[in-house]
Amino acid sequence: MTIRNPRRPVRRAATAVEMALVLVITLMFLFGIFECGRLFMRKQTRETAAREGARWAVVNTNYDLSDPTGDPGKEIRDKVKQYLVGLDAKVANFDVQVRGVILRPTGSETKGATLSGGWTAAKESNGIEVVVSGDFQPVIPDFLRMGASVPLKASSVMYSEAN
View 1 (cartoon, rainbow, N blue to C red):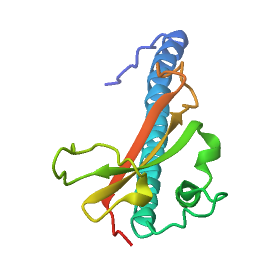
View 2: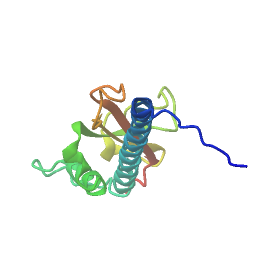
View 3: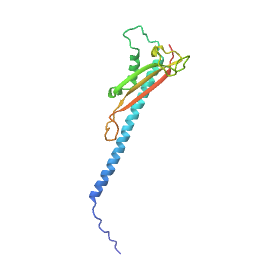
View 4: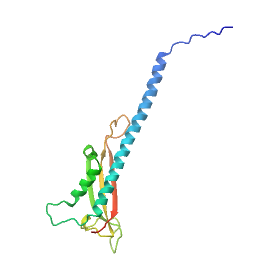
């Protein structure tokens, strides 16, 4: 008894169409993972930089304001840029803001309000907030239906050491 294999028709065009559909979906998935990874890495780096900037600011509230050329926020911005490891140059609309905030209100003060004397006037019941903001720019924004830029903002508030 012999078994015969009937000849199957060759379907090269169907294979090419299936391959094209699967390849497009796979590439979109891979590029999406890549962009999300980049987005979360940039977000985490900004959060770390804001935290380290606030940490530096809370122990250095005794900045010498008598120097007219001195910028008390410059050292904090430099500390933030150090922790951004060069990513600040690759970010559009990059900005670092430092402000003193009221964390334990007394009297007519409002919690979260900005201190009138700036961050260097923060006392022990006050905090210092460092905000790092900028726009994330995806590599392939149109392909993944993302905008041309995604605004990211990281903030860190710590109680002042009041030197």
